[in-house]
Picture: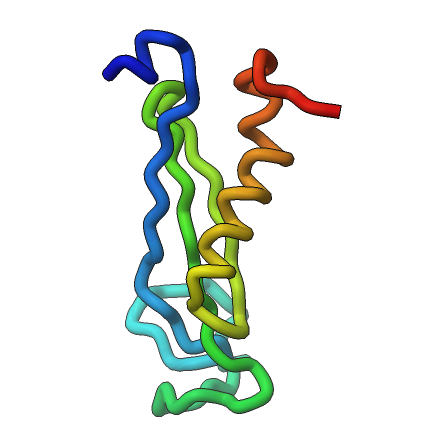
Length: 102
């Protein structure tokens, strides 16, 4: 709580469910022209060319704002740190101007 009281950034990093990327059958509804169905894959086996989407969310607890990054290669500590860095350069530095560096 001292960090929040001082106006310092307090964030939470969370990796969401990995999703297979591709044109797969989905139980939801999508409006399309009648008689013109879209071809989809029935089974959600991993497409080696497309891989999986790995969503990471950075949540700024103080500002109640979030940042989402999607990766497709690896779910590693390096990727997690990269997401925090990206959040800082794209969003955090603008919110916490006292920490800006040249």
